[in-house]
Image (tube, rainbow, N blue to C red; front, top):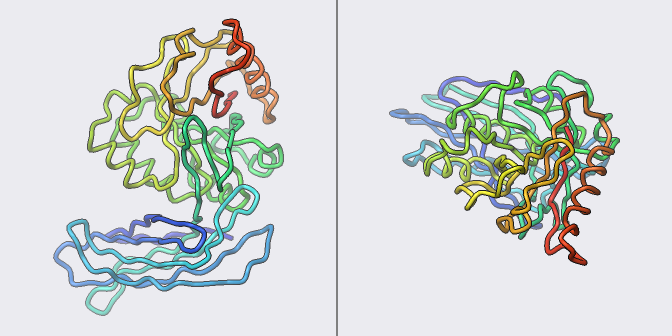
Length: 322
């Protein structure tokens, strides 16, 4: 299934709305200032390479204009959701019509996903989801290999072709919002990345670099909440230092960066009550299996009991070894 998107001005934006077992809502927004126009289109599917499902469809219903532009909605009944095991995708075709002609259109595959945070854990489809993430280069053709290994791919600034392949194959992506060359990204650039990644069901978690978090303001946090859908947004925190005093607005969990061979600072035993992803970066090439994650999990289990306790009061939400 090849994803294609045709964009013209004004652009079309897809927003994944609320969903449950019985229905799911998909919105399309268009900026059309000073133009008498309407949105039209159709949502069809699902399609999945590992299952056969009876096709269904929904028509985009125009909801008129507001301060943010034109809005249309499609409502799917008994939707098929995207998971790594069953990566169901729907084909969305939308167009903006003004004065009897199409001025913008988009055709792309989208996925409906139910994921989020409960207490200190990440959840997917009603079950606790504990990601084991390994490094994946943006230009690598490793999608099937990583999926078969049962791991998530940790990618810096992942390109759209890689995400499209992951959507279809069912590979969970943990996207790091920093350029592949290791540079920094301002908050407004990160917001735009979030906007694009939210259209890919494979992007389960987006990690914001530590340098970006201080520049987040209320407007950027509101943009995250509006754009990210069910994608989980994590902020990097230094594991060698005590945990931050709080979690910024718009951030769902913390990604604790650990130095090789060193445990977290003891103060992390009283960490904020949000999910914590342990992230250990390696100076060399990381393996494309979960062995590094398993070693990190074992080390942190020993650290958790090193103070003399017989059990840990909380557990790590995931392990990334890159």
